[in-house]
Image (tube, rainbow, N blue to C red; front, side, top):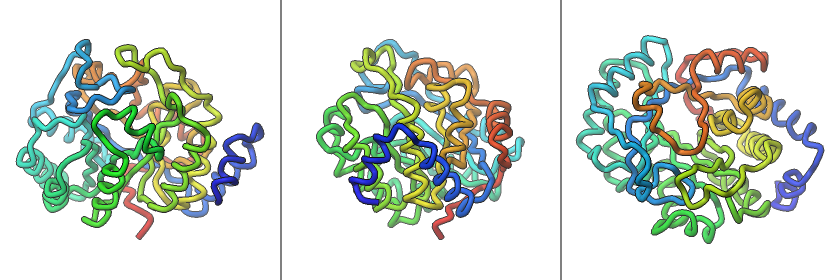
Length: 324
């Protein structure tokens, strides 16, 4: 699609044809399975100071935690015992977990849970560390590009650049990872034209996974007074992403479920999504992973209910990239 066509779809008031087409493409290229990913949020420390995020380094109100390796491995075992074949390790940009610590952790997970895919979502790291994690057995890496507008990116990410973030994504792809990018929908000062550029970037990159969700304010950030976008805009972005990527894995995100607590997951699945992240972070840690306000707790029952409502099939399989 051209940028003008994307903008037209994003502005349309009748999104039913777009949602229907996205669902058709999803069915054609991804069939009816909804893959469950086991998410472990192992640290809420972060070296960055992103304006929208409750984990930002200058936020003194958040109660910080770092899970000991033994606790991470215990949580991993819980995921494995449930039969879930993908583990997602997520944190802020926390360099307390050195290359050596993470390499050891990844090797332990792969040794204990043979056949399980390991996905990392731990932010910006030196290239040699990405390579070391991959060599240790990490299969996938998620790092959202956040916004394709370089001026907006710099404004909300102090001392960071979109150019570097894009370079990281292409480098991860070169190393051999199944990669995931994605944007935040409804950021303050973000335009429809900016969102169209996000779709065009995703189309050009053709990532294995795309994670995008609505901006939701967090009380202890500079953007706390801003509002979330309309749910319809989020669903149109998901639908357009499905159409331009065809067979990428696209999660119905926790942020979408937070925006619409009754139907968010089901609505995302109807708009072309085929993944749900289920949190297996121990409760004593989870309560302090406050990226945004009122974050819903997604357990397997919540996911199962949404999948059933959407008349889809829940799968605990690895769900590797369909881009091969």
